Amino acid sequence: MTALDRAHNIEDLRRLAKRRLPQAMFDYIDGGAEDEGTMRGNRDAFCEVSLIPRQLVDVSKVDPKTTAFGCDIDLPFMIAPTGMSAMFHPDAERGVARAAGRSGTLYSLSTMGSTSIEDVAASSSGSKAFQIYAFRDRALTSEFIERARSARYDALILTVDVPVAGNRERDLRNGMTLPPALGLMGILDIARHWRWSLDYVRAPRMTLANVAHRIAEANADISTLSGYIANQFSSSMTWDDARSIAEEWGGPLAIKGVLHPDDARRAVDAGASAVVVSNHGGRQLDGAIASMDALPGIVDAIGDRCEVFLDGGIRRGSDIVKAIALGAKACFVGRPYLYGLGAAGEAGVEEALTILASETRRVMALMGATALGDLDRTCLSHRTLAA
Ligand code: FNR
Image (cartoon, rainbow, N blue to C red):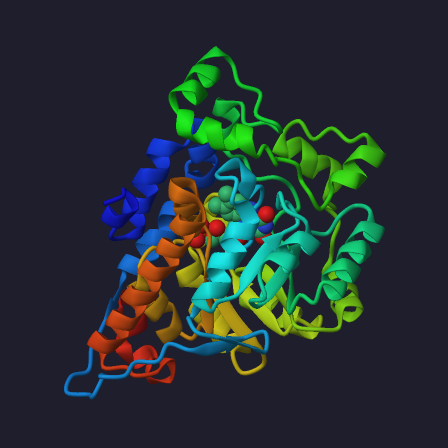
């Protein structure tokens, strides 16, 4: 029996990842901005919503299929874009994309990924989205759009909640730089985590594969993440830029990081076919509203005009069911699959997705819902909804 066989939920995978990864790497996944209040708030918001099950329904067949970005997906959750997966396991983005493809869901590759757009496309035939930021150099954004189109990505995700880097104090404390510049304690910590180190030595792919050429050209300082963001990301992007990106791409486009209903309306007006209600997993603005708390207002504002997705704090199938009952078309998960990747590479990611899928199916059955369409706000009890 492997350690993975003893993982029964996402928290078990988190514990395994914590054991296997050096602290700086684990904290990079696990942490949020400043006091991590928004990160905790994302979880708390799910706890404040209760499910009201319906009984005596034939639930011998439960079907959690849905569509996102025009793709059929077998599960109502997708892989959120996250950077530099090679730091956590050499299976990296390819392993995550393969596991997502086998699980029948969509994989999103981050601009900050350690594997290129083309290599991820070659590694899995599953549905895929490419996530971009607005770069100071607009030509780089255009280059990404063209590469994603040539590599047949199904959708583009434009992340809009990083006009400046969030203040992630765990990373500052740990000296989390690119590549990690570790003091004596950090080196001892890595030596202690010999299994991670062996993997890492075997496949030290910790470059930012998609932007490496531009970093070299610009001789840019990327020694810290916040330094990279300050150097390369645009902090002057506006809705006009979002519209121009939507026009240039011309396909399914999600704007990710929307928390205000008026911004959701502006996203649709700018040409987005989807909005991701997200606070970046609490890694950007600490004190921001929890995604689940922002969801109903945004669904009411634009739910009939575009797809509304949610991420932030999902750790259980019941969280996914609650978000869908509140009006999300589907969800994204970030840390859950990264814990799996850190714990056991591609097999760990697959385990994370299997756990969430089986929890979702079981909760649907216990709710008396045979399809996602059976879930609506009448299935929920919430302090504010009940008022
Ligand atoms: C992220 N996230 C993120 N988002 C994005 O648009 N581009 C990126 O490169 C990253 N990078 C990233 C790295 C790590 C380590 C994490 C944990 C998150 C945010 C991510 O897409 C998603 O919004 C959150 O992870 C959702 O919250 P949960 O599921 O992690 O609670």
